[in-house]
Length: 101
Image 1 (tube, helix red, strand yellow):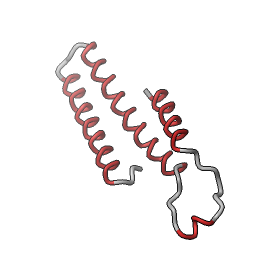
Image 2: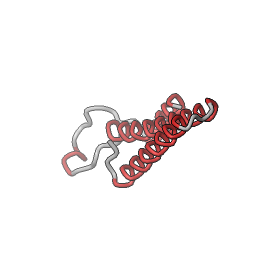
Image 3: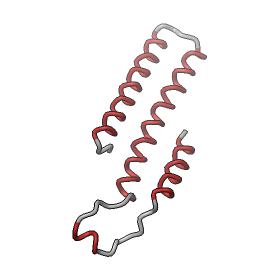
Image 4: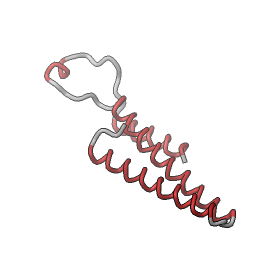
């Protein structure tokens, strides 16, 4: 779940676009549009859903495996697991986005 207000706003905007695309596809089917038009709209809908999935997955990965919030007691405690450096997290997200397309 996107936690920051900006992430949530972006996810909702994507979801509204997906909803609009689905409604457009429904209208096209009802109107008897050509298969090539329907396939193009379905591909766009699938791409939009994949983009939303990638965004939510990235948010989840960064929340789960990103650096923990720093507090006074956490600054002196030994971490329970190793946090991947930001560059490694960026690379992981890039790879996942490649395979989610």
